[in-house]
Image (cartoon, rainbow, N blue to C red; front, side, top):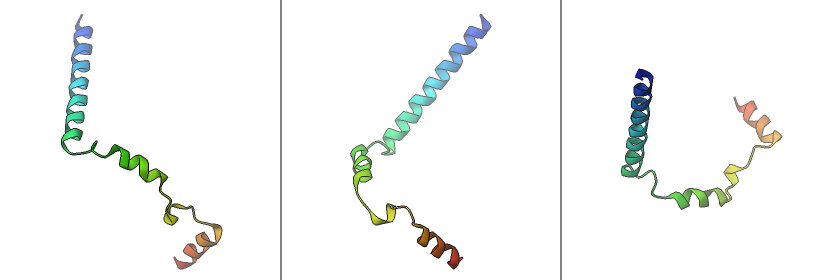
Length: 63
């Protein structure tokens, strides 16, 4: 019976921790602009393209 008591206490503690983390994220504005992040993925920027072999060799020669 002692093991079951510990398991219940641990489960309640984890649930409380999760609830507090969720409330903190709501208060600090972490969940305000969910659509903006999804739309930024679709925007094309030249800086987001991978480097070609010539650009890599040019960067290495500068070091």
